[in-house]
Image (cartoon, rainbow, N blue to C red):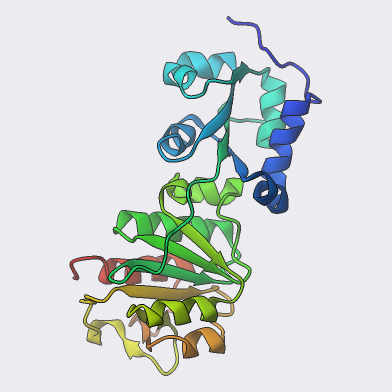
Length: 260
């Protein structure tokens, strides 16, 4: 078996990769992020520039395709892989990727998902994945949403965070105003003063933006006011509410291109 190129957990390259995994501010300044797992790295490499690939010898033997992913590649010892993963066990595959191209928005006739203050990485990742699955054009992240390029969000999105264009705005209401100015219909997911989903025509020739808030607080009043209307998913009275990613995915399916 091939001897590893990097055997020290204190190697400068390893420290750099760990910092990418741990700090959103550092990811932004470097315009790069760290991803773990052979399937995730192979998927991300289709849309994001892979700068460096780190693999254990065992992982490389198991997935030979990793050898051709990046011009710069290093084999690492198992204990180094543990440091990169942050847990005792890992898949032994890591990639340092450059950010994908940013979203170009708003485009009249487009399909968009907008999130406000969705802080759970699992929910953000799952929603981006659903948006990609149902043919949406981009995702708008407003307020204090979880970083789409954090390790947890990347895993939950199964690579969709690198495939679907993303845009960030400090105040979501401002971004929604731009959407409406472009003729795009903005619909807020809200429990109160809203219409049941089955009463809403999914056809939106001018484009649509679905607006989802955090699971605990929902959308801010300003974001709801910036929308054309509010919608809700009819559910059994035995259940108070749906998980944010589940509710968002139902809405994304309903308003997918082509309608119900």
